[in-house]
Image (cartoon, rainbow, N blue to C red; front, side):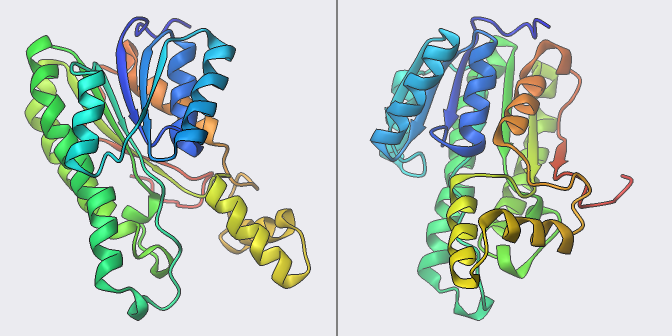
Length: 262
């Protein structure tokens, strides 16, 4: 199916791995020209080269920290008029005792997960409105809606981002600019692999066994963790011409953990 976005320009922040990389792959398959930012040069260039070889898409890697003024300037210098903006970032570590989270950790996560994306949206939304077309998708976390002490550094900042995103969506919808959030549950990303590999070593088990313990404990209906490419497919759908009446929404993709009917 042609999603109607071939030739559009997209910025994907945090697109060198995980769900960000899944978004890059899905958009590349649709013929979108993509500008991908991340802080780690080697992994970023490797991921971009891999997807270019698979799809033939035009992909520009940008080594930058999108939570800083300098980083945002570098990204927007490479792509000053994006049609599509996908915001994601490496998630903070799982927390144990929430009392142990110090001010430095809060400052860092607020800068990366809240202030950076907000300032980026403020930069690009006026141009999208002027051109009468735009798609903004923030890949946040299901913990923004369903709080967990283990995700205390991830949920609250992204809950604020979701609130901001939905509020802004109402102001720009009349210009054919659609702004939405994706709230993922547990997916097989590099941090998850590392964390469960370490747990398995401590317990004398395997990573797959430890993941299945969590699947059972949290009653994940799908019986597995998600694949980052699943998120990429949802991103592409929300960026498409078929989604021009979907805005201000926060879609949970968690394999059926949560059970709200609204």
